[in-house]
Image (cartoon, rainbow, N blue to C red; front, side):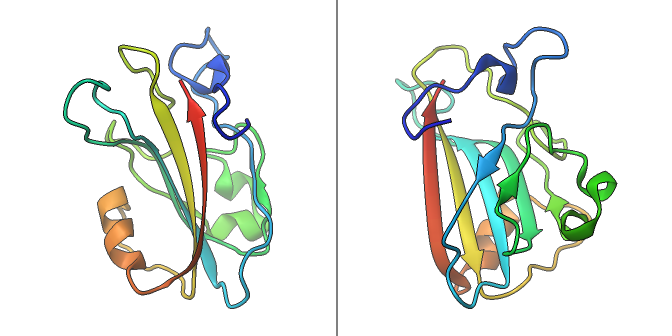
Length: 154
């Protein structure tokens, strides 16, 4: 996916059969020195509708990504323990569908921007069983050493 490009259907709720709601592959580079972990939030920044008051809708929350990882393969969501190694420390949080992991966008209209925001942090994050975007945003305050953003269109 390219910045400001279109999100392929298989990564959305509008795909067909097994080719829908697949978590997209992601890559990142140049992680800042001093980074102890990365965290990712993916949200529809035009929800619920571009003409209504905007309340971002969260599609994916991930914490404690080792800074040595350079991305995720397609279909990664839900497989961090299965993949083992560096992936096993990663924790996927609950999205706004109230389930953990990736849930692709399926807004009622087109023209929505889906923001992928990666935080480089100077610490690991410690949560109970349920990680949410709100808990993540609160926890990263004062710990962000860098950020990267990718916006794709739906």
